[in-house]
Structure formats: structure tokens, C-alpha cells
Amino acid sequence: MNILGIETSCDETACAVVKDGREVLTNVVYTQIPLHQPYGGVVPEVASRAHIEKIHGVVQEAMKGGVPVDADIVIDMRFVENPFYYEDMRYLSGLDEKVRTFVLGQPYVKEYLDHIEQSVIDTLPLYEKQDKHILRICFGCTGGRHRSVAAAEELAARLRRRGHAVRIYHREARLELQDIETRTEKREP
Image 1 (cartoon, rainbow, N blue to C red):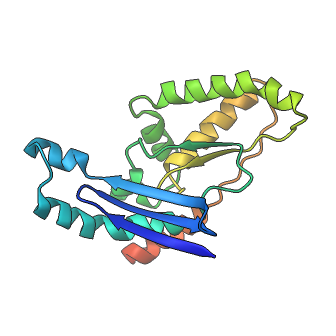
Image 2: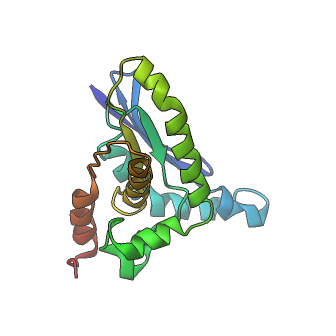
């Protein structure tokens, strides 16, 4: 049995899906710390408003597909500014050059991907030693259409340049577009 847990503390909005009371399938936390920093502490009215504004998105994210069960490495791209909030990129994906340039041009993204690439290269011999011939690297973000797609494509290109066979699959990209269209009552240009 899966259980949906929702929590709103003074400065966090969170949601998790737990399987059989023991295995956390998804866990999403929105922190309000940056909202309260200018005031030097939690402001109840600001906190209450933020909970109301964020709870739907936090629950929606927690209930999405979750981390693939066969993932070997999971990489979170939510630290990158989200192209969804820009009208000219909302209906595009990380496969489009405009979104790709936006995502990969963000502060620390190149360095982050450099680090991930080197970590993968360093650990591949260890996986091979364990007779593991397929390494599943999963990228995640809020919707799975913009940031994670651009980052996954970039890492795949880097690994291909090093001579590795790479197959890429974007599990959420099409579903996320349908969700965006439904929420905004608009259609892809």
C-alpha cells in the first residue's frame, strides 16, 4: 500500500509517497527560508500564503513517476532556474536549442556536469568489474521536460565523444507537455 504524506511546518511544504510504510518512493520539500531571510525569522502570514501557493505543485511533483526503480545514479537538476516560467520556453523542451542554451548557460551547470561526467568515467570500471554492463543514469527536475532533458542530452553527448554507447529515453517529457497544456489551457505553438 502506498501512503501520501503531506506536511506544512512553519517554513517548509513537503509531500512524500511511502510504500508499505517503509520505502520512500518520492519526497519533495519546498523550503521558504529565502522568503523569510529578509525578516530575520518566520513571518506567519508569509508562510501561510506560501503554503497555499506551493502545496499543489509539491503534491503533484511527489505523485509523478518517482525515481525509476532500476536507476543506478540519480541526478537532481532543480537547482537550475526553470525555463517553464518563461513564456517563450514553456512549450519547448530540453531538446530545443533555446532551452538547452538557457539551461547549460546557468551558473555552475557546466561545472556540475563536468563533475558528474568525471564521476561516471571513474566508476565505470568498478561497475564493469561487478559484471554490470548497463548503467542507468537518471536526471530529474520538477516536470522532466526542460532542465533534466537538456542535462541528460549533454551528458550523453559527452560520453559518446569518449566512445561509450549511450541510449537516452525521456520518460516524462511528453506527459509534462500535456500537463502544461492542461494547466495553462494553451496549445503547443
